View 1 (cartoon, rainbow, N blue to C red):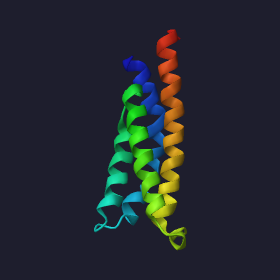
View 2 (spheres, rainbow, N blue to C red):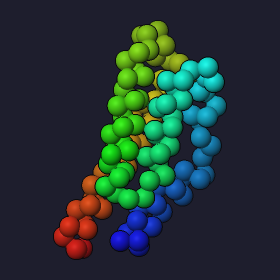
View 3 (cartoon, helix red, strand yellow):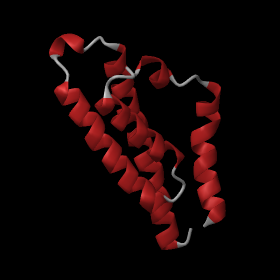
Length: 109
């Protein structure tokens, strides 16, 4: 299981280490709810256990979608909104990886 978790980590982190985290540049320090979605997103990004990852992804997605719903339509071009959409895309990719990993564990492949 460790080797497959390591493999999952390798799939996620090489690209992430090459790019600067745009989220940290745009989060307003006075917005506690913005910090909440960022913390949950980061928790999902660093989780190695596929089963726990699915839970963290669900939590992060819920917080991100809530943040998007709380925003007004005129904020659509706001850098935070772009980061929220990017985070949702990454979480979708991570969910696919975690589901594949869980399936491989169950079938023993």
